[in-house]
Length: 293
Image 1 (tube, one colour):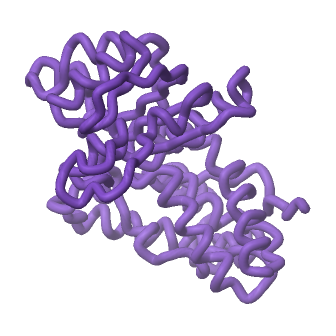
Image 2: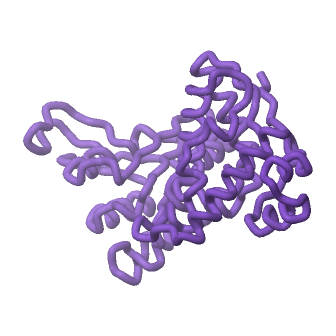
């Protein structure tokens, strides 16, 4: 799945619902570890194994014994360490750097990646035997733009989360604001949505989150503009994005009464309906998503 879709949350859910739930869940982001330290972090090392190894270190595999080891961004693993990982999976034992004996481990491996590993295998940057050893039960996590029905549920969850964190009492989100969130393509996926709700809850004076509380750039992000920095809006696209936000603001102000909105906009009601249809603006099913304790 793409970055920010919630792959680690799914891994933790699998762990919590399985027979290993009382045992450790150990997560390691392979892209975040400096390359010279990756082997030691995963497999551990003995004292004196290399310069600076002043003490014995237990690696992530041993720490996860009888539990789950989550290898995030496994596509970033060096090819030589891929061979060592394959051996651990096959033999179920690890050997610390500088060690002379193997240590048995009993773990479940969940690996995640945001790259196409099949292509990486063809490009010879990922071992084919390791790919098939890991690819026992594949789980595809779709991007948020392909599951927009999740947006209201996630908004509710994040409002509750940040109400608790900030001691706020934001009680929901307006129709106009929710419509804008539903219309956005979310290049940063769930992580980007959480960031926006966190900011909105922190800055909201009270009541619900309204259109004016959301970042202005949400309304001016066309399809794919958030994904390609070299794709500026055309004049027509910019006008459509402005129209969408402006009309949503008026509809929100009159509580989605289209007759009143049309009068304020100086349009016939049927003209407004046609414009809403052309802009892809739909009335959300509910006014707010109430805060739940």
